[in-house]
Amino acid sequence: MAEAADLPQFLPQVLPMLEWVEIRRVCLTQQQCSRSLVQAVYQRYLGEAPSSVRARVQRLGDRLNGAQAAQARGSPEALASAAVEVMVLQQCTRVLSENCEKYADLLERVGFTLGDDLEEVSDALLASLDRLQAFAS
Image (cartoon, rainbow, N blue to C red):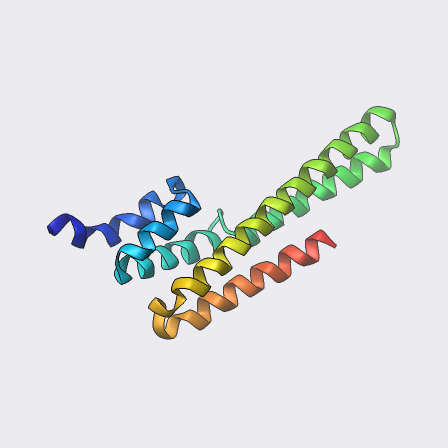
């Protein structure tokens, strides 16, 4: 039984290795696991960490600036490079959007386990979505 009680403390460490199906499955096992996983998602992907959606959007913006500078050079090689970079940026934006949908789904299903902290996590998700949407347009 001691192993089951220790599970919530290890979840933030294994979060990057879990697929979404596994995350949902773990959340169904016990309420403390749900809370631990949602907090880990917040800290890793919705907060100020280098792996967060907002930090990734910032890096995508830097890449977009580079692609625009290459395009401004006007050479065929630069134009081809810029076109490829824009396609990669579109794919990255799509992946981040899908991840945000999964974070929202997780909050919808088990966000209640956070109690009063739910508002802070929800606000972080909305801020991430706003930043992502601003970049995509």
